[in-house]
Length: 402
Image 1 (cartoon, rainbow, N blue to C red):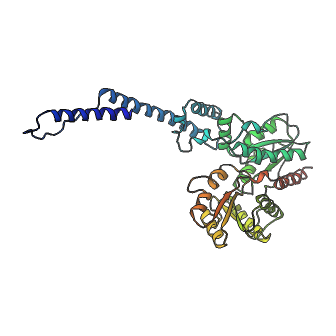
Image 2: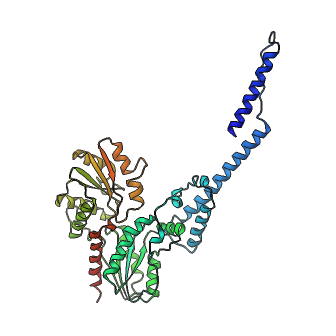
């Protein structure tokens, strides 16, 4: 349409020029050019296009609002219907309209990003549990491939070691549960749903195995949820998270932390002349000392090329910028970034390895201090030695039931 408008304007100018050339120019006083209007046909096309753009944005905004409505941590009686409505609104958009989706939390990647085949995952939300249940509780991830490799693999290894117990799953992040449900129609229990399922199935012995890294905020919330079911289930035992007890200060380490340090360094397989930067989440919880303890563990075990940082920059000295300075001062010119998280989900793919200028990959490259910066997007949960730690923690918890 823009080409057509330009063509019409050019024709008008050309016609005016021809008339001027053919007529008398002598004694003709200069006059102010009259204001010309675009042809009615052009005006109509412009109006139609403007209206079409407005309609596209309105539909995209409606979808974004529906996505924002399910980007919440509380499940309600309306959640299932809201998840369905958000996906239906997305599916009704054209490809161009989908690119316009932008809300407080919504963006085109919410439904549009390919994170793998959800059908390969088992939500472990079946009934017929029996009297003995192991409930594996994770924060969760909307990245399908990571859910299979980092969470489901832990659940399966535990199930293989304890065939007399039924393994079920719960996620603590309702935001993630809603995302997976809306996008893939996979229904994952939150803590209350999983515990109600246990009660309804007559579970007498419940072992809860968190896949959480530490005794942090998520672990505390898990324990608070369990307190509401103490009089409904005969025996409830909570197993240790991956890194075990927190300890009093940064110098206190334990065998779990040593085992995890050995496992992740071996799996990363980084040469000694290359810095291995492990990016954790970080927390304001008192358990944040765990990250400092892991740095102490690495140093005591002789892994001097390993640096532990956090997305949140807590505890102090663990932000991306501060880790850049530490690696630079240590003299390393090659860097490998790897998540220090059980699951390689959104943080690993975006905060660590994303294209945005505030990702760790971008920050390390922008410093200009390193010859190469590579990434390994793999969660701790897929490492065999880490899975063995969870198996042992589960065994210790089962042993407490008499």
